Length: 369
Image (cartoon, rainbow, N blue to C red; front, top):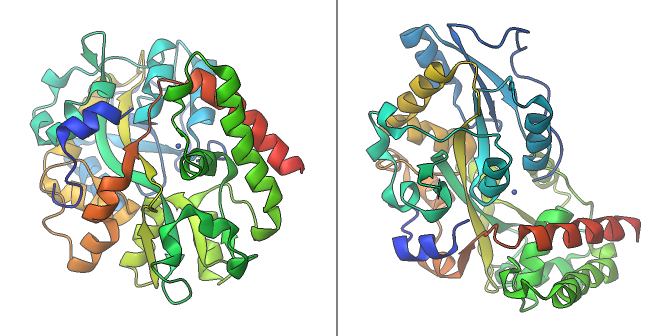
């Protein structure tokens, strides 16, 4: 996988994101979930290209019913409310959220023997520690990206975009945006602290101090922000409307804009940034599990499917060979430079119980200030 040449050691050491709620279903769900010719998938917009959906349905006779997701927490809450009888067969979970879903019995272990093409997943991902718990694998990696800094190359220099502190630069007052919760980890990192907060396990006082320092920075410079956003599409629209010149955002949506010719670039600032992997996971007690396995294997069967997923989503593929058919512009849009890769740290879930209650409270304080 040329565009994301992680070392296995680096990924296994550190691997472990968005706001809003579950969106309106793409296809209305039947009240009877267990059916012989359907598979119910909860996933993000554009993760499954329409061309693939159409081909899969023609080849198998199985209808893909999609419910759009734009927030991991909301997806968890809905799955917990439906348990033990989910409406979903497959759900899309980020690598750093696996532990929460698995420990709550919301997922079934993946039987890789049912996936003829399992070996087409790049080993950096399929053999990572976060995907395995209790001797089982709990998902199929499909796409990977990072919390990055996106900027208008006609208005912002590469040097200016080389630090997260651009968000507080008076030169760009009223021309920057970020999603408050998502920006916290990167800002904590930019201030010289551990955004994963693993370093502060057993020391809640220090963790609170670190979070509050980032909170105070946001509050002090609140007038710098054009508008706090809650989703990637909202940030995209602000660039299109020329309201902002820089944004903290997940890399995928903006890589897609670069592919379409917008004068943007995406980088990992010098202070570092956090990476993640999206996976398709089998819901525990999936009503149509066999159809779910058919869908998973169809995604892996040809690298061209991975290519189309890249083009549709803007995120890099975890499937070997998926980058070979991409144009030079497409490769540039989704690729992280060697410098960026050196700066990339993968999100860890190890300190989530410590981290997120503190950050969630701080987010509300920033909004209220």
